[in-house]
Length: 185
Image 1 (tube, one colour):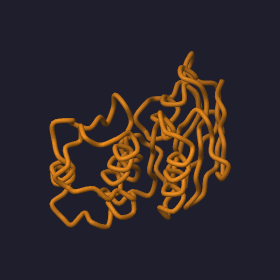
Image 2 (tube, rainbow, N blue to C red):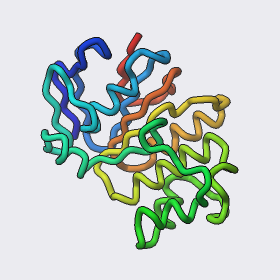
Image 3 (tube, rainbow, N blue to C red):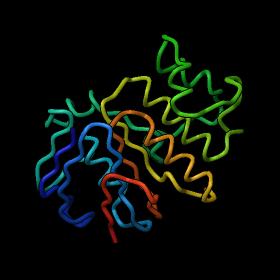
């Protein structure tokens, strides 16, 4: 599903090689400033590498990768509009039913709830639901553990593992269960 060989962005993150099959969870862990978000965006076809090769779901061109992959919540890239409701975010993206995406993401709030009233975990879950609307082969999520207590982090990791898709997610502190771990320093 994802094959990266010697992938790097000069001065941002070192060479990374990875083979992640369908349905696996790949975790990119590291402190702030380690390049984890840049690596995530590179693996998602949204940032151009200076070295190496990348294939996602058989696609190697960035535009083609973006068609088979979707970003969940990535601060500064896929920010949620705090003045909109959950329903408005979902309807803005798709006019077809979205209940299944909400269920898979584990988001159970009134759809009339304003995004500004969601806590961090609910915002991440809304980002996951929005990504699932595109029916991607790969879902990418950033800063999964940001500001969450251990039980809530674990609940999010469980949701990501149970999506039945290839998932790449970043964090500071990796979960106990993952298929691949890339640690950046």
